[in-house]
Length: 280
Image 1 (cartoon, rainbow, N blue to C red):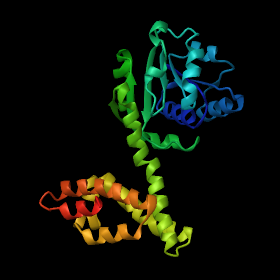
Image 2 (cartoon, helix red, strand yellow):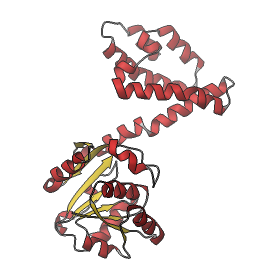
Image 3 (spheres, rainbow, N blue to C red):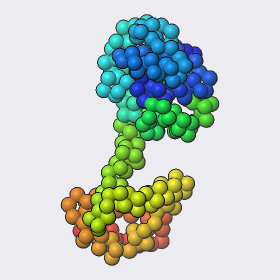
Image 4 (spheres, rainbow, N blue to C red):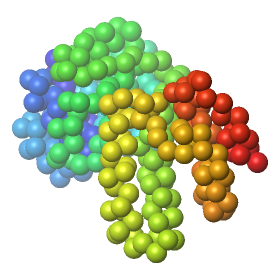
C-alpha cells in the first residue's frame, strides 16, 4: 500500500511521519510550494514530487492535506487523473467525503479521516497522534481496512456518518477552541481584580490543568466541584450580580448545563431554587 500526500502543511507533515514511523510506505509529497514538499519529504525520508500526476500514479492511497477551503478545488484537479480503485482521503474535521464530488464516476473511493487532536506543529505533533482518537467515514469498500489499520497502530477509531460531521466538529470546537475563549474570560475577570495578565494566567493554569485531568480520568460528573455542585444558589446569584453583559450571559448559559451534570451526580438533591436563579 503506497501512500502519497498532496499538501505539505502541519497535517501532511504529521500524518506522513506517523505512518512512516509505523512501517507504512509513504511515496512522498506534492505541494504548490516546492520548498514545503522538499521539507516534508526530508522530514519523513520520502520523495518530493514535481507534479500531482506523478504522485497519483505512484500511490494507492492519496491524502489531500490542504486547507479545508481548498479540498474541493484540489479534488477537481485530482479526479481528472487516473484514480480508478485508489483511496482519496482528507483530514478535515468538519467536511465529509461528500466534498469529493462525482467520485463514483472516477471509480475511486473517498474518505474523511480525522484525528481528534490539535495539530499545531509540523515537526512535533506527529508524536501525539499515537494517543489520538480517530474518526473515519466514507465508502464502504475500504472502511474496515482503514479502521483496522489505525487500530493496529494503537488508536481508538469511531466510524461515523457523513451527515454527522458538522456536529462532531462542533463538539471538538467546544472542547478545544471555545474553551480558549472561556479561559480568556476568566483571565479578564482576574485582571479586573488587579491581577496582571501574567499573574492571572499563572493563577488559573493549575486549576485548568487539574480540572482537565479530572474530566479525562473520571468523567464530567465526577470531576464537577464548586457552588453549583454544592447547590449553593446564594453564591451563584452573587456571581451573576457581579457580572454584566456577555460575561453574565456566558456564565448563565454554561451554569444551566452544569446544573444538568450536577443533577446527574446528585439525583437526590433538589436544584429547583438554583435553576430559578439562572432563569431570572
